[in-house]
Image 1: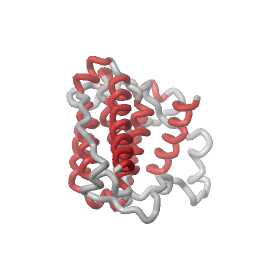
Image 2: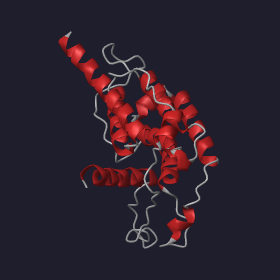
Image 3: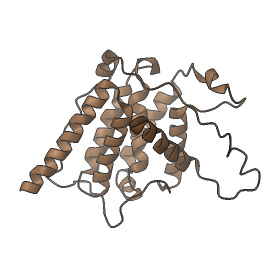
Image 4: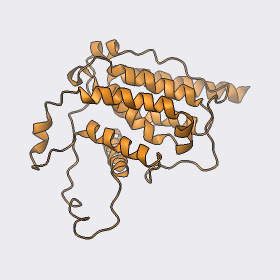
Length: 229
């Protein structure tokens, strides 16, 4: 009973920290908290149905908000969590994840990215900003059956639709209106430009990293800079 109480307190504390981060616009910390919860779902402790519902609530933070009002936040956080669910977990909630991806695609199709010309200062190419690159990477990872070389999953653990009774998620309780009122904004849009590695494949290299793995690796670097820089 003592261990069950401790486990329940951990999940409740993570959710409370997540709510605080969302309301204050601390996207990097929110990313890491969501990945921690995804790992609990991968191990069968948290219900997969619960983590998908949480991601739906996170995605809803973008409802009817343009980027300049914080609209990118929910879409970015939801999409950046999906690669950290195991292929087995994705297979169990495939239809629900498809619904999340469809809603994200609707947002992206109407997203006015007026800053894009500024990202062409080093290249004549039409570079993808960070969110666009993430959306493309998630599509590719889905095609690859959600396998990614740069995401480690603990072997021997299996996800569960129901999870353990002591690990329960409560409603997020943060809305798009909260995001709009708080004046939360994501960081200035970024785009990766491959100054060194851009021509390796054309020069004969045959060990190119997949786009989904590249995005994840770049995200590890950016999160490390954000958290410890």
